[in-house]
Image 1 (cartoon, rainbow, N blue to C red):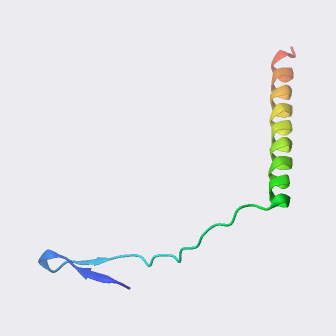
Image 2: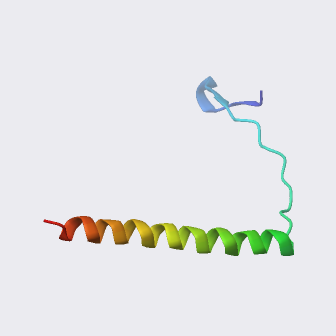
Length: 59
């Protein structure tokens, strides 16, 4: 653990830093999956809103 002694004799403990790496750009298959999941989530949200509207108008 990296300790640093400050003024007055106090010790300050710093966390270990994670290893850095560069992210890679998504390939064509990942982009396609993003679009599919986006459309599915949009349809799910639309269905939930439609059920809420229907349930609120039923007497």
